[in-house]
Amino acid sequence: MPQTADAPFYQLYFQEPGVAEAEFEKDPRRTLGAMLYGASGEGTAAIRALAANSGQTPGVGMVPRNGGWLPSGVPPLPSRLSAADLDLYAGEFARSGFRGPLNYYRNVDRNWELMAAFDGVKVTVPALYVAGDHDMVVAFPGAAEQIANMKQVVPLLREIRMLPGCGHWTQQERPAEVNAELIAFLRSLPN
Image: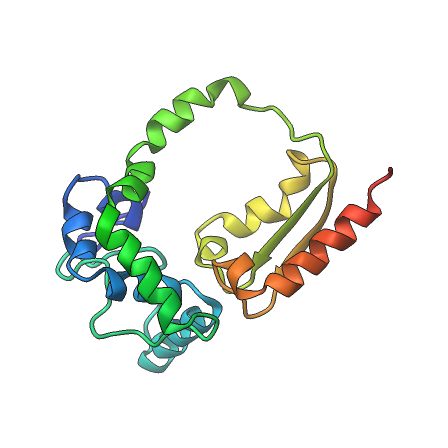
């Protein structure tokens, strides 16, 4: 995972128990608003535009060492989300905290160890890959090559669909399109 003198990759930032929790749990509503907007298609477009206007390259997934993961200020509410939705999510995280979700990232090495028996095994069922073209994950170094070469490990991959303007929250941002893609895919399968 990349890191520079100024910033580690977000998954490295999440490793030390208590650090990200302290930042995120100060204001769960702001945290979730930043996550849901920042990784959305509209949020990613805004970040790219800001970077282009300033002449900077956005550090995809990088967390400034002197500032933490959350951006300054309060991000706008994603267009697909109501204030009541955000309040509900924030209330649940205020109750449960962020440790559980962050522990997923802290367990990444163990997950690799547990899945070692499947190294090299191909996915041999018909598959459809749907993602947003503004998803930060598809902007990670090497992701474009992995997507382009996906048929090597998923030989029955029927199609790769990149939804224009869609970010990381594909099913939330574009439920009708994702459902249409899925229905068309399922109809294409033999009975």
